[in-house]
Amino acid sequence: MAPQGGEVAPRRELALIVNGRPAVARIEPRELLLDFLRNRLGLTGAKRSCDVQVCGACTVLVDDRPVSACCFLAYEARGRQVTTIEGLAEAGHLHPLQEAFIEHGAIQCGFCTPGMILTALTLLREVPTPSPDQVRTYLKGSLCRCTGYWKIIDAVVDAGRRMARAEAARR
Amino acid sequence: MLRPFEIHEPTSIAEASRLLADHGEDAAVYAGGTELILVMKEGLAHFRHLVDIKTIPGLETIAYDGAVLRLGALATHRAIERSAVVGRHAPLLASVASQVANPRVRNVGTLGGNLCFAEPHSDLGTLCVAWDAVIVLARDGEERSVPADRFFTGVLETVREPDEVLVRVELRPFGPGTGGAYQRFAMHERPTAGVAAVVATRGGVIQHGRIAIGSVGPMPVRASEAEAMLAGAPLRDEALREAAKAVGRHAEVMDDLYGSAAYKRHVLTVLAARALREAVACAREEDA
Image 1 (spheres, rainbow over the protein chains, first blue to last red):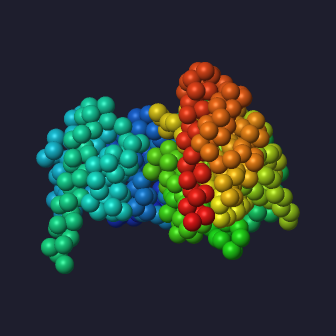
Image 2 (spheres, one colour; image 1 turned 45 degrees about the vertical axis):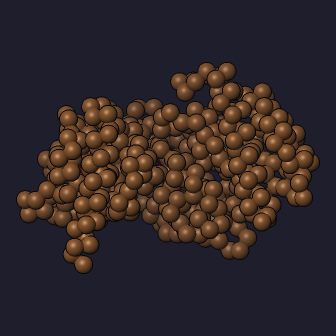
Image 3 (cartoon, chains in turn orange, cyan; image 1 turned 60 degrees about the vertical axis):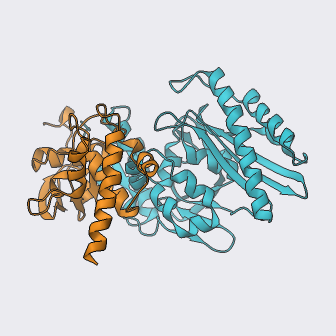
């Protein structure tokens, strides 16, 4: 898109890692991470929804922490690791959280799902087997207009248990 | 879409201050950006120069020197929530930081940004006012300290000069016999009303209580009538209840989308009673 009113800002190089792969682009400082991921890299898992960092549909992880990509400058991701929902499956196998969401019917229209799963993933890294209440509190800023949340909470609790069991079995 | 801007990356306060002075009203301090990028996106404000203070080393440091807890302006809500130093010396601050907005905002948003933006519905602003926090502003080679209750001057307005940078917030942990609490009511990301209370007690008497109310008016303010009632009052629930009523009665309250003035006044009274009781309970624990 052409800048408004003939204003221009110098472009700068952005080098980062997205889903484990290096990405480089020349960007304007005003470019949002969400647009960078969707428009330049074709990673459309993160959605534009409320656009004011309230709903969580645009959630991606930057250095393993959730951010609202709709209000986060791509510039801020320089030299950092970005993970989108597209980066969760390994070698064709869905992540246990993705499997649990499918099995529990925690997906209806699917629009909030990428953000829900990435946010839940960061919770499980801090609290491996959370209670339903802990899930509810942590996901308070992630909105779903279909499911009524119960199945999402069940899925996250169950995924935590499964991942903890798998981890224990590996030891 | 955002209108174009340039990002400057100063490596010292002096350089940041010079950039802010040079570009005047066309420049804004850029920290976490959770508030700034939002208003720029919405077209409510535009700055052609963002001065990114995250390139200045050391501004995120959290440290306690045995008397004063110093929180660097760039400490994120998450860093404060999880800091062992804060958890040990100012657990109330950690608890309030953990309630800000949502995990995404807490990962990115900073203490300094929250205070400087002066959005009226800030939890941390209210807490800082009740706690008698000191806000330290700096420009090229000089610093000045501002008590939190003189920092905010209106909606989105503070005493910070355009070329000043908030560098840190200083808090004194509660001593023996002193306790604090923060109570809020929030249906959405930002609270409808918040009350912070710090109560100092000795031998069954309230020495003094500091109460701040937030989210109901243009900025967090002290509830001075209620504070006057607490000073020297016996440590009984009746005294707390009466003071809480005074908080609601004397508060200057605005109608907004979070509720009518009458409703907020009622909520303030309820929250003030809860905050005072909790603060007193903490004071007793500290005493024990």
